[in-house]
Image 1: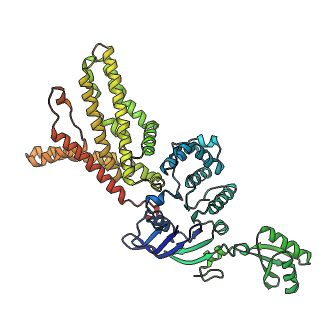
Image 2: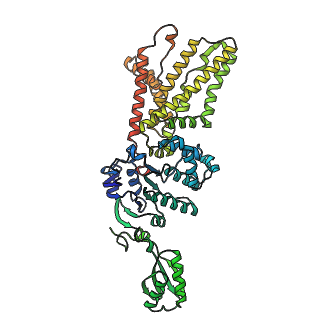
Length: 311
Length: 236
């Protein structure tokens, strides 16, 4: 397995007037969970279309495991969830999964069992599976689409806004399924505007803007310390050393002090709660404590030159 | 051919309330005719043209405009396989309905002491099957060119054009143009008359070759068109 290789990919629309992709080069390693973020019209969907072999690039090349993306050998090991999910509304959910199970060339002998397992995997019971798709809610449709994309445990999974329209439980489920895919070594390409989700599940993220990869962020290593808690005191703050000591005791790190404000790096919500308790115990009159935006949010808002972004 | 696509297309066609209602509308009156006017024999049944249109309309275009095709073609399915499977399913659905209609009509006529000759029944069934296969191929081409049910509009425009050309050619006595209009009409309704076989004769070679070339050409063009599609909505 060689993963996904994209070399100087260029794609234009309207006879070259609109440049959707402008010399994009990427390498996605096998087993990597790779995010694509960027503003609307940045070229993300075009990039995904090219990766799936639905769009022909004007120049450049894409290979998946050394094959063209529309090679049937690659399609056999690919799962795809489109953003604008349109399913055959007359079918039942289970019938739809059985149809895609057959289209994927999976063994007919295990079809009923696999379909039942796929429904259960996304939290849809047998009653929901027997219901016609036209009676599904938006969230149920998204779950069914995800079940379809993960049929047969594909080696390559392309997800376009997978958590769009799902409830918080669905978002947690989506994260769990993505982690399961990662655990079995699948390569996942995720296009999403939900930056907090991307930050939580992806190993690396490409920030695409005006058809180019403007920045590449590696999240896996630094994700644990990615959150910054901003604390405002009602009065004067103690000394920098006292704050650093209190933070260290709570497993956090003091980043900056500018009384009455202080910034701390924390691992997660629990660590943030511990830090606030430690500060109060140390006599700090905490008036407000709030998370700053995540790394990707900063990258998105301020561009690749912002701290944490590397072009 | 892809068995899953053929089977799913058949289920889709036979569970569409609109298509079933139209089929009943076209199929039941001739059967009532067979029951109450047995002297007319099988002539009231007409051919499989109407049923073929009911099943074939939007056979590819509806998948494109609804967006379901993108998900299907993300699977290991060749586009040619998709087109040929849809064509076969539509033709099979038409043949099943028309043959059922012929069988019921034959039983009704038999009950009224006016049973048709077996060779008449076979000739009608064979001709209907060839027309169903031919019309499914024509509609596959038109449906690959237009979204939704616009293939019916294309067929109508092509038929009106052929008729107008024929009338104009006759008015001006332009033999070549009249022949051209006739060929367009033959292209839009590819059929082979098996009637000569009933009199111990042979079916026209010209009709057979014309039917075969139309079916082959339509399917090849439909595959060529679908192979050129770009399916991402980013391109729109």
